Length: 325
Image (cartoon, rainbow, N blue to C red):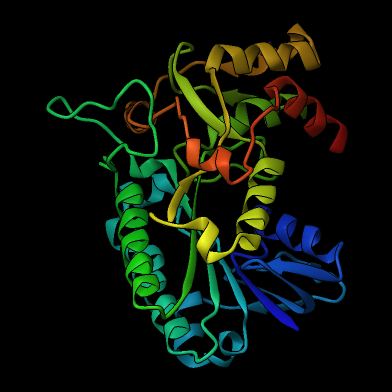
């Protein structure tokens, strides 16, 4: 009987992962089918009225809960670690990112590593671990062999956790699946402080009759995952055995590559030219620098071998979002 704990569980991705898991009585975990006993969502903020049936919901700061209520995690078979401070706020407030991402993530790994059951940790990492400089530019295509070189605090914190979790796995204290997500678009809800937030906002807001700013040039290339790709990727990673997953533990989840102009075109194709009138184009140097430093073209032969695919068009993603509103 499997207990699954999702950190950041009341957030957009956490809710979707939980909903997907609830559709099944059993779950493939590390290559073995297990009946689902319970699903627990842990988050710092729980929306008013949020309380999905048959789910355990715990509100609190994750680091505090790890330190004061470790029993939340001690019976878990799988922990999906989604909780994170986002890129923009990490860049503006170093101490916040260090505590929310690095310190909390290390504490979680230490707690899980003490368990006699060797739980499975699914860690949501990011394409932000990659970056380029004048002396060491990014290659045109990021492959499985490309060396991480983060150029922002968020990516650095994610990479440090990747390394720490890999060491715990090397010590045979944990099973680990690190899945590097692309920017997820289209996200519902309100704008957040992520540098990539406009990649959802420029679609979401006009579809609701609201204005949204595009802070980067239209020829900027980005790599995206749809919400469905992200959720399916996390759950698929959970099912793959240690032996099949292999090494290194970090894996780039395949996604879509397109320009901001192509995103704009998908909005127009879905909602008409009047939707474009709600977009403004005021450049933001900080966001532009962060986004320009992220890779947009990925090739992962390893992901393909493990069965991960990316066949969606962004226009289909936008249409699906509009239908679900």
